[in-house]
Image (cartoon, rainbow, N blue to C red; front, side, top):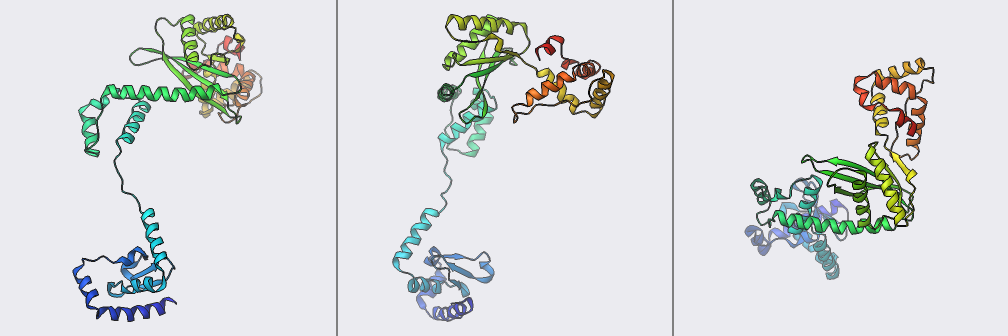
Length: 359
């Protein structure tokens, strides 16, 4: 049946409906909702064309004068009770569930917000924060700063166990980078990052600890803090190499670590101590991002009678790009050094002779 034939049938059925006293009374009272819309879907332009499509067979009807009796007759005549029942079940499961507040979800998101944005635990007790939460959901269960601290520590322990399991299952060894940071409250922290190749041969890095250092930053103290962090994760036997900055106490740290490894029958080659070349990377970035500095570097290449080459910046997605960066920098050694020394904004990036020798 095409749309025109259905339209004629609709007109006939609508005429019959108009003399139906029961249907007329239901329509006037508005007390009985049409069952037809459980099986039919209104057209997107229903207000203009009054068209509806049967969900069971795709037949299209026109609801003249707002009547749905023709839709009901179609369901009763063309479809079995089994089909109707199945459609009702489908509608129930496909119906979008209304949003419901979940206090556990709110607390978990609150913990993540505090951690990621480094908020104080006491933020949850500030009057303005309480007003904000209550304005979003008056029934929200507010928690204390002590509860936040306890919950975040539990979350840390849970994640720490997962990280420990992950690192212990790595088939190879792990390299580490360390750096000492000072907080706004003048507390010193040792950041330890692990670098490893996973089972899919992908290079990964993971901050495994950010631990406070007490006392002086001696090599022995750094060694004790470093070893304690690795023992906490049971990975102290998997050390391959360590990269630090150029501070003299890091040399003492590596020597102390090497002695500790020997005492505990753990193999560690202290020659796998690598000095950080962050100054080189910063120098190359600043030169590459300035056309004027690139011109000066080119002129200095001619001055020192070396190949006029552009520096290479390493990228995380290419493993050998760091090697390429260092190799090119060594070829441009004299020109890079002179360019940095003659620019007041690059003096913090000057590479010393010791650093060049390490490279």
